[in-house]
Length: 181
Length: 384
Image (tube, rainbow over all chains, first blue to last red; front, top):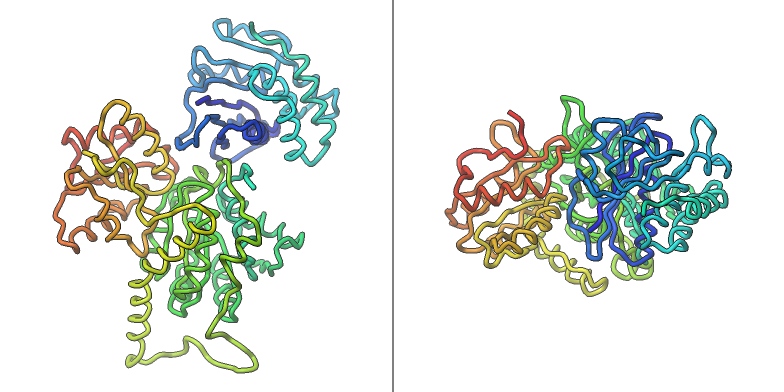
């Protein structure tokens, strides 16, 4: 079983991203489970969402405390003292940034400028870019076990507004992500 | 067709498939997305139902009492304070023998203010004369809501389908959504024998003298006494039509268990995960998942109870000063059948505190090594 945590801020679409990725892995033939960190959401405040992938039905229904992979939608989240304890030491991390964060020297880190891609595709504003679909495109490349077509189909099914631009963001990020070797 | 749905979406799909005719609901977290989706389905015409907007949950239930009296199929959903506000009308619905189906997305009762999960809201409505089911997966929610209409309409007892707020309601997982035709064959339109009809005016539930009231209550009780066989029969037919089986008590690794945990809701799911891990370590752990509080499945529970096992009950609810409601029910059921065995009661997960696999393992540890108390609550995950 793989456990993934999505670290975002309210308004970035982290919860929707967890739903789309769960749907995509389901299309790929996996059992999936996704859920938001349970609470009250506010724009700008930290938002966490979770997802499990398995080859059998997932009975475990507690929250994820140490993830196998992390998608970090806002770079400065990694500076929070709660960040490192919430991922495994060998977790695969994907960070929305331009330069690899120095705090994560000992971690397996892939980086993607999801903000730039979102703005190029006309998703959100510079104050509030909608980076979630770009993050997912990059994750598909990084994970290597999800066919891009399944992800595109899930985005098409679950994103009713600016669907084409979101599909474009997925594709661009899939191409541009610089993956940790 | 299999799709990834949240628990709340599974409810809305079930209500659509059941061709409910009148819905009345008032928003409350974590239920709100159910009534939002149903309102959308009514608006788009995918569900040909009247959605009655009201100013409170008390009015929502009162609206359904009126609507159900005219012979139509009715539904509402609520949580916590909303359910408590309905309390008075819940008795009316059962006393008037109206087959209303309601979802309660379990949420702890304030104060202090909370939106998170425990089952105290629904177990506190135990004595209102409603059937109560507890679900552990989104598939079970969809299937149970569909079955509940048949069960309620056959027994003329209102039915509450309960599941854990957030842990189930906001979790997305694959759900098989049946075809409308298949559901239509299983669940025909409601046929009400007694109904309000302007062409043949009648009065129902009017002032009743002491020479008759008790007989009304006796009849309701008698309906509860035959409820289990009706429920079993309807789920058997459901199994035949949809190839998914549900039992009032579901046993997992219970037969040869040395420690057995009786558990409901989402915690049962995490408990099953934990039992798999403990079995790999050679530990004889098992669970009995209760799907009903009313009727309480006493016979089925005793049939499945392994003869030698130490018994634990996990309650995600609390009757302050006494303990968990399911533990009380288990003890009462055993004594009624002349079974004198200690019951070890665990209380965990109140107000949305997570029940983790580690918590469940600690419960099995305590049952196995004799450290669990049988005369008072064993609190799990409590800071004190």
